[in-house]
Amino acid sequence: MLIALFAGGHSLLVGVPGLAKTLLVSTLARVLDLNFNRIQFTPDLMPSDITGMEILEEDKSTGKRIFRFVKGPVFSNVVLADEINRTPPKTQAALLQAMQEHQVTAAGQTFTLDEPFYVIATQNPIEQEGTYPLPEAQLDRFMFNIRVGYPGEAEEVAIVERTTVGELPELSPSLNAADIIELQKLVRRIPAAEQVVQYAVKLARSTRPGDDAPDFVKEFVSWGAGPRAGQYLILGAKALAALEGRPVPSLDDVREVAPSVLRHRLVTNFNAEAEGVSTDDVVERLLDSLMS
Image (cartoon, rainbow, N blue to C red; front, top):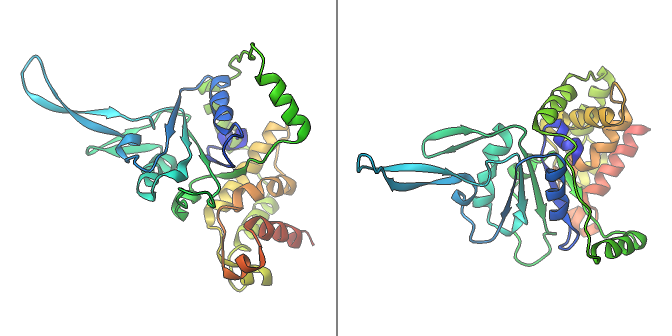
């Protein structure tokens, strides 16, 4: 999540309910001293509930009635789109412009969002009842798709022990908005070797079932990743290198962020479904094939 923030991207957390995804996001916003809004996505949520709406009010000085735009919860530094796939695609699309352009157009006006602007969405597995699949255009706006699994036994024991006592830990800010903006600029200034860029582009292009794709990609993939995947592979590698105190990213950094960047950008076909092949399996095989 920090890699995505410092790279200027957005994150999608996927996991079953009860794994503290919402707590993780609110905690992150508090330690980074950022404004935080949570949007609970429900089947009856409307786009205006996210972006804002015009209200009619009377000007007491003139007696005239005028429309005034009231900003919605998307106007914040950190926006938690909680259970984003429980609302129809029409409402999900309200985030598209904000995530890509950091702007909101409403009531004939375009409003610029405050920086940094970071959307973190949580999603329940699509097999659960009452969920809608996210459109490909919406998925592509997320830099990372982060799988949140069950904790190990020792971790779960520690969770229960720490959360069933009277005192909870106090949080103190470590960074602020200005610091994060400077770090985002720093990540962009980090140089990447030509071979690292070429590797990232080759990895993204290999997911597309064309002439240059491996046979298993042609067999299991209907649609591959677009150019945005290569951009996020490099930005993620740069941010990872910076967080670990290294001056430039390596091929290993690209490989490290590749599953989170690519898993939601591949569309598998019936052959993959019939044989139980997931997008993670395809990405893993791709990484192995490009190492040989």
